[in-house]
Image (cartoon, helix red, strand yellow):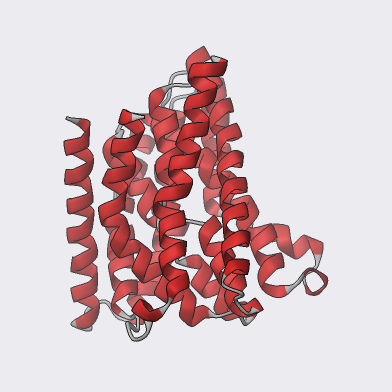
Amino acid sequence: MESQVIAEQVVIAGMIVLTGTVGSWAKIITEQIRYAISRLVFNITLPLLIVTTISRMEMSHEVLVNGWWALVFTVVSILLMYGFGKVSSRLFRLPNRSAAVHELHTMFGNIVFLGFPLIAALYPEGESLLYASIYYMVSSFMQWTYAVFRLKGQKDVPVLDRFNNLLNPNTVAFAVGILLFFIQFQLPYLVYQPFRTIGNATSPLALLYIGATLAGTNLKGILKRYDIYVLSFNKLLLIPFVLLLIINFFVKQVGIDFGDMPGTIIVLETAMPCMSMIVIMAKAYGAADDLASENVFFTTVLSLLTLPVVYFLTTAV
């Protein structure tokens, strides 16, 4: 039954992505509109979705324990992706501009524009978004510190600049949501309902953005890049599977208390396609942004097939 749900959600997501692609081809979703959608999602709808979802959760020992282990396994996930990215970039002897993009795209997935909508659809209960937000916080920390360092070079980036971007509407929303969760304060209905309604627009807007982004990708030469096949296999299948084995080992053999749902969410977040923000960062810092665009396109298309496989593995292993 759950496998059918994720298959349906992937198909629905694919249809919305396709709508965004067609809208871009038809010049309805222009570059300016696409940029506006990304800012709308990142600065308004997603923060409101996070704060309204987390603040409505009921505190329990199970949620606190699962949240702690979600944090631990998120760190494990990031370390795994870092290691695989380093090894594979050296295997192909990629030049520095390309190696930086390859490594970072192995590490960072589209958890905002695809991960959150998928998780919210699969697990409508508020608890699920807590674990997804924990993953986002760790990934965001690494993105605006290590990723900036890797793209630009340590000596060229002041320490404060590496941390400035950590303070954004989503991290603030997470902090506010966690605070309201711990004090168990319920937002008044006339505040909660309009904020929640706006937050629910995150999923379709984010997927339209992905579709519009894919429409502008240059397909020439993608299929001749052997490194993109390894990147896709590592990012979409191998690393999530290794992480799943690690989680199952600690749950079954060591006996830690970690629920199936938070474990599945961490694995699915790990299996997200390459992060679109890395394209923008690569362009800003002089890395291979053309390769980054191709990575996003190729892995996003493949993820419509691999995400159901990864979800099935989480229930079978």
